[in-house]
Length: 225
Image (cartoon, rainbow, N blue to C red; front, side, top):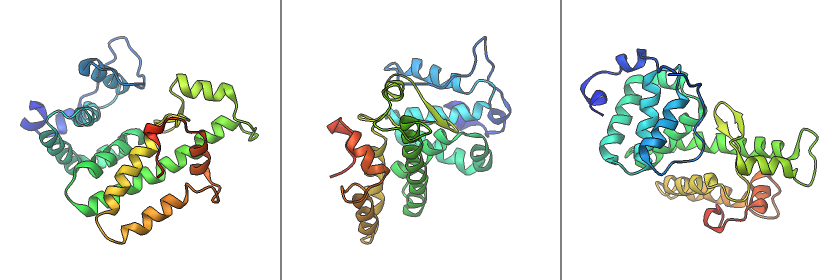
């Protein structure tokens, strides 16, 4: 943390993470031990700028509620100083995590509302691409069991760092709904947006949200009322 507080970001931006005999690999699942989890995350950035890993590290620390106020301040300062570099070099997975972090913690309602567009766009596409993976290129029905098994047991990459939605249990849409509700509460007319989201879950309105609702089994992560 001291390196983020005591210096500008240029040195971190120019430093490249060395492989030490390992190839870059996406982290899958969360380790209970923080150091172990950060080591997995760091491996994602082998061959890339140290600044990108530091950005990811801040998000992990914030998610684990470690000195949240100070770490969010570092995170925001990093984005204000290095917006173009971060936007151009982070994959979509981490761009979405950045949007979620702005939504959760920033005090500017305009920034929170703008950031909400990121997960809404990407998660809708994520559902569509996951369903295409499940059904196959010919749109087979019912769902292909082999595809479901792969989603349940492995990380299935879809595009630009975004992995497949896990049918039945995934918490992505529940978390998105919580954030959407918080943002929509910023103005009385935010109720219109929530009405649109809720209508997407109704049986009469056939769409990809409803179809994944029918695939869902874990009550704790439901995203509809």
